[in-house]
Length: 69
Image (tube, rainbow, N blue to C red; front, side, top):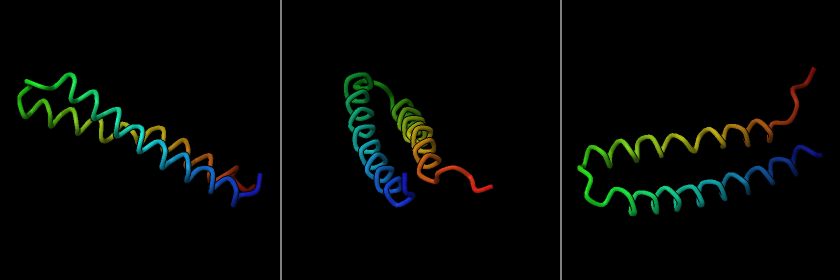
């Protein structure tokens, strides 16, 4: 697969991942953290804001393609 096509597909996947992940994190927060104190909200959004990086790293590694030898 050409590198340009791989980067285009990866960009679409990254944007889709961020949008879907943000909505899921928001829905989970609204349903479960209604009466929780502020520090619980802070910890939830801190961790959920960092977890999306893991699948994004996989997509970015795939976008870069195989390492040249």
